[in-house]
Image (cartoon, protein in one colour):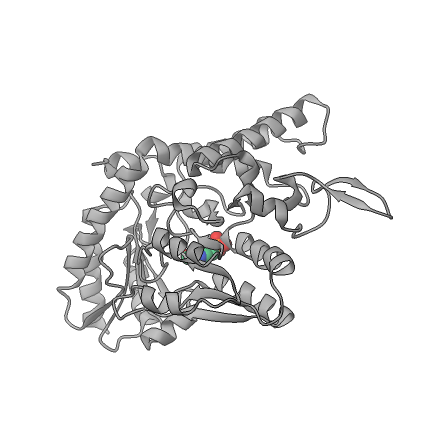
Length: 404
Ligand code: PLP
């Protein structure tokens, strides 16, 4: 079992106080805090290796290029991708999904075709498809779930037709915590000859993800949710698919030659990386991945599971609590409501006790509609959270409930 108390020391912000109370940061699904090594990497890059990459013959540019491409290789190894050509740097999960929504539907979809998503998707895996659906006259089918928050695979199978062109689903739900049976979902899609895009925003920070083992065509995640910087993320794509798809944006870096008569696009991965990439963010992300790998993804998963079990048991002792998401296979997310208390009021008062939780619809309004609620409180955990913090949270919650 990892030692959370020791690891906490790597995160300067965790020793802060808010309103005179020690910060308890339970908003890790929204973004994670950064270890000192990541912060120092950013600082060090700006001090020592800042120059635009790929185009320079000078020393600094070559050093920055090398660091950026080494970061790509680190991400390739982290995901166990076959080639670094399969790793595209984006701004985050949202941009990765938008890229595929745009390029895939440009190339592979005709009017009348269908895309499958699930009822528990984050807006960033719904709206990009809706935008393309409206432009290209395609429709979106939705995999339903049961009351525990598990996708209904029998119903999923029934959604396929000869018009189905892509399945795009979350690996882990940001509200319910459900770890979807993603290998099975991918296998079923492949039986129908349909490729799969996986939104891995809430999976990659919490468990080992091996893209070859999963066999998805596309997989996305965000740097800031895995202890890396904001503004950088990854799209993994099987090389043969990325070769086939047209570029998403045009500009510098993504071309091999340009004339007014004809432009030839660059090879992978640069074809999808128009403009100056975030070469500071990429190296800091690689640093964050090294940091979690040193702890061990399996250790992180085991610790967070244990913490989730403990927090769930303690939360269940509170009268009138309703927990949303009761799948047996669940990530470290607890969404809930207590009686008729408004989630926003509860979140505000918890904040006064130094406890940071998220309230609202969590960018999953269709899921809220399915659950019959407007919003919920969400506590989401990291390996740096402790059982003691859960105790303070539960005591705080009881006080807040009394006040309200
Ligand atoms: N998908 C899921 C499941 C998420 O939880 C989030 C963010 O909360 C996103 C996508 C969007 O991630 P980003 O805002 O980093 O692009």
